[in-house]
Length: 98
Image (cartoon, rainbow, N blue to C red; front, side):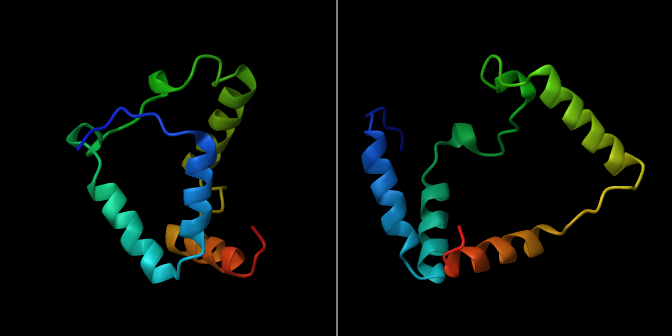
């Protein structure tokens, strides 16, 4: 199911804002439906740094990424499980903090 029709950004934003007002269970179902609707070309897609927009990966950002990777490799980074991160984000969204 591929479509090339351009949708104005303001309509996308309005749709997103409407979706955020749905109960979390319904948002999850909607997200699943949207993910399932993607073309096969997206399935299992591994985005590489070569796909970033030109100029996105500045020297400063490269240095920061290198620093973070080194801290993960040497065990000094404080890693937070994804479930905990998402739980915190959802809680902040529900509290109107984001």
